[in-house]
Image 1 (cartoon, rainbow, N blue to C red):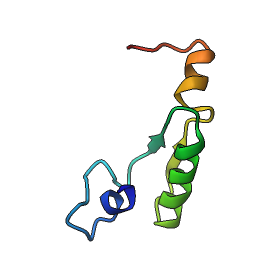
Image 2: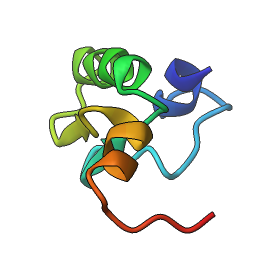
Image 3: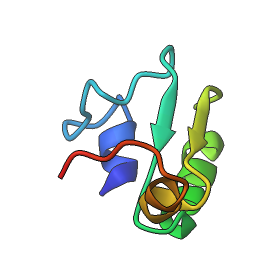
Image 4: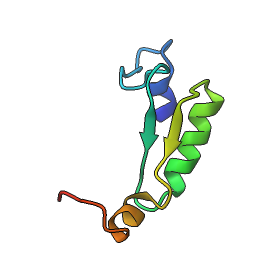
Length: 67
């Protein structure tokens, strides 16, 4: 559904998907967010990145986590 949310010409568009803002995507281990980042770049989003290693990598690196 992300493609539908990111396309501002569709009725499903969500305002969080703004090509003028920095978007950082994340998932559990980084694989899905890497693919989603690539998809958004193909859709014209230039300021988008993903959290390498995902939430798991963030947690293992000792960064703060609120559960």
